[in-house]
Length: 130
Image (tube, rainbow, N blue to C red; front, side, top):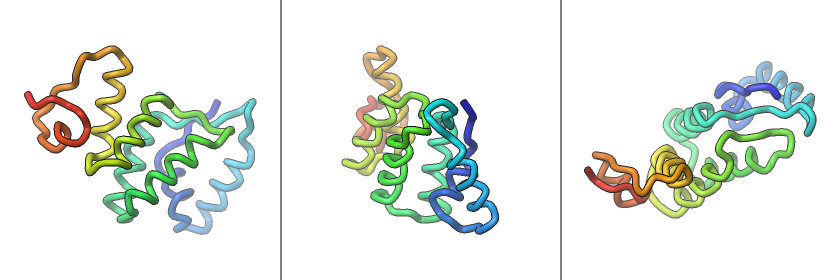
């Protein structure tokens, strides 16, 4: 297994640097079910943030990109079940992806609830205001 950093995912999504994008394409083509690429939750959250805030990608484009990463057999994603559930909440609400993922990770870990000071996270990600 080989870890993948945020900047590779950004190049893959944006295709904005011909030299780096070509290297990403060659790297991804070298992966297989026997030698998979690993996407950590930190990498995923950072990528979603950069794509939304820096590149102004729409929510639907971000959801599509994350779903494509999740579906790729040569990639494995940390917390795949939580990511899938968080992606559904993110798609259906105005919550941030990170808030949706935080809540889902807690729930899947057995937390009765997740508390926050973030009012939007309470309304849209299922957290409770402290």
